[in-house]
Length: 588
Image 1 (tube, rainbow, N blue to C red):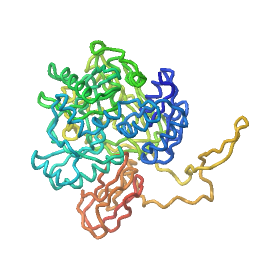
Image 2: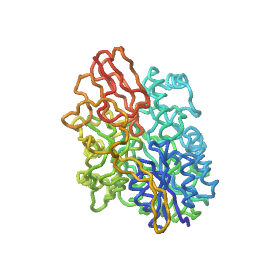
Image 3: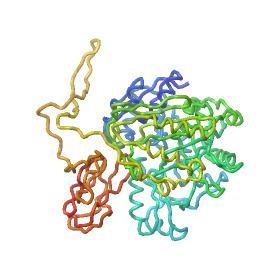
Image 4: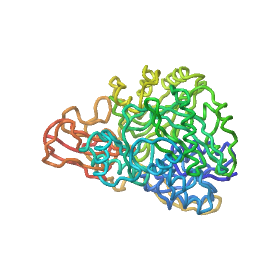
C-alpha cells in the first residue's frame, strides 16, 4: 500500500483526496500557489510545499516546481485530481520515471483517450458509434468552415486535451469561425496547457449521459453507474444525477458495455468516465475523461463505493474488490449533485463572481453530503476554477432526491459572493427537469431566470485595509535556524501599488456592474484579465457590441457597449488585470 500521496491540485478535489487518504492511514502532501498559502487543502494536509506564482501556469501547471515538491516530500504517489495535469501524459511519465506511482491511468491510455480525437478512433475500434466530426486536429479556420459547410451549422469546436466544457465553442455560421477558434484555443491553453482543437457536429437537443468505470492492473473492468449531466450552461455542468433517469430499457446496459470495450481497447486502468450524447433513443460516444470526475460523488452515494479509495488501491496494484454483478447489485436509490459555483446567474448570464466568502454554512440532514474546498473567510480567486463545493443528496427514489436537494439548497448559506444556487433551485423546481425532457441546451434556451436579481457582492476594500506583503526573516525553533517568509500588513513607506483602471460608481445593489444604463462608462462586472481589445479610439460602436474580452475563472466573457456612440477612450490592453467596476472603455 502507498505511504504518502502528494495531491497535485487544489480546492475541493484536493480536500476530497486528503480525507480519503487519511481514512486509509496514508500521509498527504499539499502544494499551493502564493494565493493558496492558507487554503483549506493546505490546512488539512500533513505537510505542504509552496509552488510560487499566482496563475495556474505559474503554480499548478509548473512541472518543475511540482516534481521538486515530490522529491522534497518523499511522496511515493501523486494524485492529479481533475483539471491541471490530470490528463497530461507527459506529466504522468515524469512521475513514473521518478519511481513514483501516478494515481491514474497509464500514460499510453491518456495519450489515446485524453486526446479527444484519438479517443474517437478508439471508440470506433470498441464498436461505439461516434458523433460526426474530425478524427484529426484542425489547425485553420478554413478546415472548420469546410466542415460546417459539409455537415451543416451549428458545429462545435472543442479542446482536444481537456473536458468540462473548457475550450468549447458553438459556431452558428462561417462568419463566427475565426473568433471562436481563437477563443477556444486561448481557453484550452489557459486551463490544460495545450491548445489543439477538433470539430464535431452539434446535435440539436441531446442529453449528456456518462458511464463511470474502474479498471485494475490485472485486466478487470467494471462499469459502476450512469450519470445524467444535461443541466448545463456554457457547456459546463450545473447538476448531475445517478443513475441516469428516463432511459429506454437496455440502453444503460448497452452504454456500460460500450464503455468497457472502449477502455479495454486502450489498456486502461484506474478510474475513468466515458461520455455519451443521447438523442432520440440513440447514443453516440463523445469522449473519455481519463481521470476522476467532479460528479463522482453521486455514483458513490448510490453504491457505497469510495472511488478515491479504489483509485489508490488500484495504483497500489490491488485487484478490484467487487465484480460487475456485485457492483450493480449494490446500487440503491437516486442521487443528485449540485455544483455550487461562484457565479451570478442573474438574467441567465452566469457571470463569474470571485472574492472573499464572508460566511459559508453547509446544509445537513439525512442523505446530505457537502464536498467543499472553502470555508468562511476563504477567498475565491479569479485565477482558478470557480467551484466552491458540491452538494450531494441521496433519496430512495428520484422524487425524494429532488425534494431533499431543494430543502438542502434553501438551507445553504453562502455570503460575500454570488453563487449558482438560485439557478439550481429554478432547475429542480421546473416540470421539464422532473419529466426528464431537458437537454444540454435547455438551461440557456428554455429556463427562465429573469426573476433572479443581481446578487450583492462583497464590499470593496477600503483605503484603511492594508494589503499583505512578503517579509523575510530568520527564526530559531528548538535551536535550529530557519530562514522564513511571512506575510504581514503593508507598512508606511512601502511603494504604493500601481494605479488601476478608474472605478465606475457602484450600483445601489452593490453588483459591481459599474456604469449606469447607457452611461458610456463600460465597466467589467468581475475581477479578471483582459485577453483581447476589440475596439479603438474613434471607432463607432452599437449598443450590445463586444468591446473587450475578459477572462475570469478560466472562462472568456464578452464585455459589451452599454450604448451606441464613438469610442472616446480605451483604458486597458491585453494582459491587464482589472477589478469589478473598473471602466475599460468610454463611449460618447
